[in-house]
Image (tube, rainbow, N blue to C red; front, top):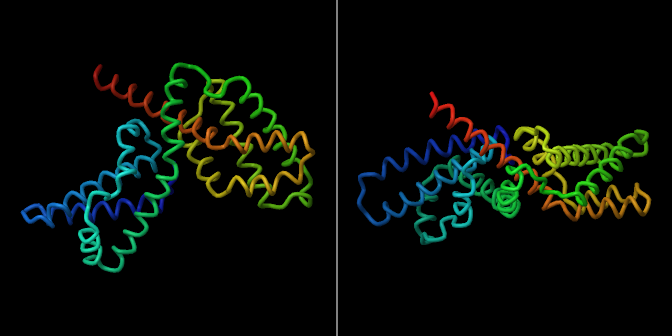
Length: 254
């Protein structure tokens, strides 16, 4: 959901290397080898989690979230440093990129946890937004569409693009509210696009374009952004769980 093709290629390459390293340590009974093996196993599990996030598969996400909060915390620093010092230049670069990808997932931990909770509401056919929030989202979408209809020379390309992303976000939220179809691929695309913009940036760029009542409506919407992202994640979790249940039924009835 938050990773692209290049990230997937990188993670796959790192997994292949770490699997070979783990196999090479299998017959070494020493303490250092044992602790390094544990680190590699944890890393491989984290890589699989990140790959699942990349492929929009959230069906088993709740059980594995602790992998993001215990990143080599129990290992002595000298074990980690010894491992990294034995890597070649490319592998060390890959390790740095791997850690950066983990940080991106950790930043999403709050919305992921709330999204998992909201997925239960969504799976029961109820709206996680409720009437009041859904009404606000509908009004904000109208405000955003008005900005997009402004003459080209009055709205710069960066503002227009960020407005378009927010308008799509609103449309997706309303589809969740009404129970209409919304795929994980669509959710993933808007979350990746949204990650390019800080809430403060959006507020600073869009607020001057609006009269006071519209500005207050938009600021309320932007202030609710963490929850709104959680709503989309909740729908993605619900989609993944539904897909897994459907697949299981086919297998069991086959």
